[in-house]
Structure formats: structure tokens, C-alpha cells
Image 1 (spheres, rainbow, N blue to C red):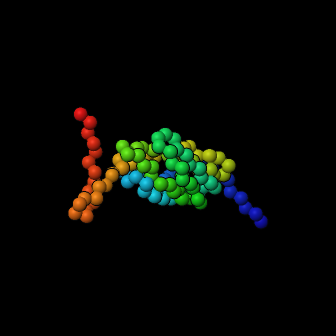
Image 2 (cartoon, rainbow, N blue to C red):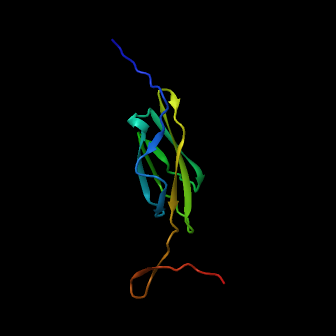
Image 3 (cartoon, rainbow, N blue to C red):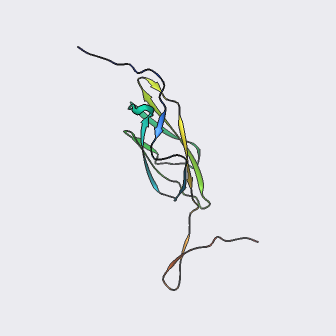
Length: 123
């Protein structure tokens, strides 16, 4: 006998361990597991940059989203959208925002210690 099951209802993506991340350092590698609400496994996942700085290494392997936080001298923000497919349907897109801190420039002092370089202020 062969049994088959058909999924009913709507499931939404859940991005684990991230909820509008703040204060992420530039060029930080980020890895997040993906699930569907209710713990249902998705057949496939897709991710895209919705707005903000580009993320060229945005990938989904299995149910894990990985990318490197973008870098910008003044800081930046990127919103990423994730969708899953299950039983022939596509979930609504779930978005989250990654806020990246300004990139700090360092100066090696005469005493051999590193110090953050203060931003230049134009008068």
C-alpha cells in the first residue's frame, strides 16, 4: 500500500535566531536556520535582497540561510526576504532587516597600539 499526504493550510517562513538584527559588524558571516511555522519542513527555500545594500553571497543550502553582512563606511541596512515551497505552493515572503554598523578605520600609534581613527569633521 502506498499512502500519500497532502498539506493543507498556509505556512509562513520562520528565520531562526534573527529578528531585525541590530548592531552587526561589517563583513560578519551570518548563518540562520530556516523552518516553516509549525515545524513543517519546506521542499525548497529562496532568499533575495528586498532593499538596501547588495549581498552577493546570499545563499540557501538545505534549510540554512548564509551570507556576509555588507560593509559601508557610514553603516548600512539590508532587508532580506525568504520564501519556502511546500506541497506545490509558495509561502508568503517573510522579511527581516540587518543593520550594519559603520566601518571603523584603525590607526597604529607610535607606541604600537591600535586606536579607532576618529571621523573627520568638516567645518
